[in-house]
Length: 106
Image (cartoon, rainbow, N blue to C red; front, side, top):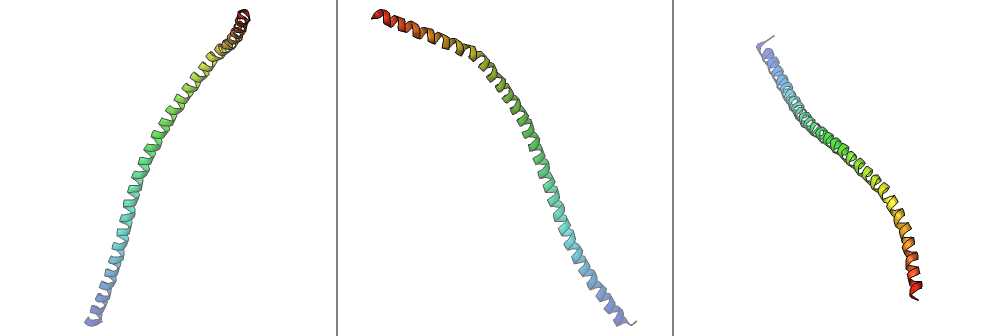
């Protein structure tokens, strides 16, 4: 092997090494970008999870409030039913009394 052949081989290997280095740096940059994206998306997922948990708590509280309102509505309905019946009975009696008073006046 001559000095020129050795120099040619070294130049060839240097060029190949430079190409491999460029390829490696390109891949490292791409992996770094993916890593940043994964971290950002992980933070977004964590934030969304917190929001979902908050919504679940709010939904549970709302369900409890609606159950309470429903029980109050049922209680009011139970109280109003006898009062409505009483008013119906009294209005019939009042109507008859009014008719009797009209007859007495004429």
